[in-house]
Length: 349
Image (cartoon, rainbow, N blue to C red; front, side, top):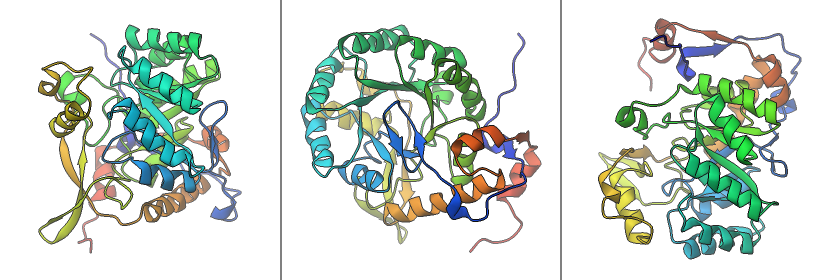
């Protein structure tokens, strides 16, 4: 059977371009992620319980971005938390699933005045998800839908046809996701973005790169490949605003960073909301449990990202995201280059 070569973040570099950027401060990082939602900063905190809660949602919004608010609590509790964000005049985008019981969650969110939601499923290119999107658009024509996750052009086409305004691209790239190992399915993220963006251009939709970035350079690559913004988890985990306690391990501080489909998180989800889950819910695992180093206030992380993105844009001669999309030129690199990028022959202190 013939097969194609697909590329991930470490497989490529961006070629430096002649740049008109006189100062990194001249770079504009504003972006549009739905017809009505505009961000000043193209980073979205992921809808994982160990990353996004009320504090993270507030911090991301105040920084000029937004968050995807997790869906694993009972609907009334999710709405209660979201009210805390909205009452401070800040922004967040609630997550919902696609089971029949999620329709009640959706109604509560709409009654709250929510204008944009994200459908959060591990494999959005399935009939159940597509039919759910169609049902939402029929009932709530005004509601903007961000749907994912997916990994192919055809998946993006089908989601846009169903009524999605934005797609989330990233099947299995996350640091604590084991979907590729457990199921044997996935797509390296650079290729997945490049393919899905073809559909976004065709339908006039928007595209979010979801997962797999480990540093600001990866985020620049994701945006350069065509993403309008990037959904981030591990880089925000371990901050003060991420939910959870600080653990001391061998004298160093950490916070828990567990995949949403890890055993610990599934047990927690079952305890919080067992209404739509069967007895085998915790027996199938597609995520691992880990610790993220403690990082202090999330603004420190966001400021570092901000500086890295502005510098990255300047290397491609881009003053904004649209120019980055136009100017970016990728080259494929050898495994030797990848090794040299991270193993510099010196002791890092």
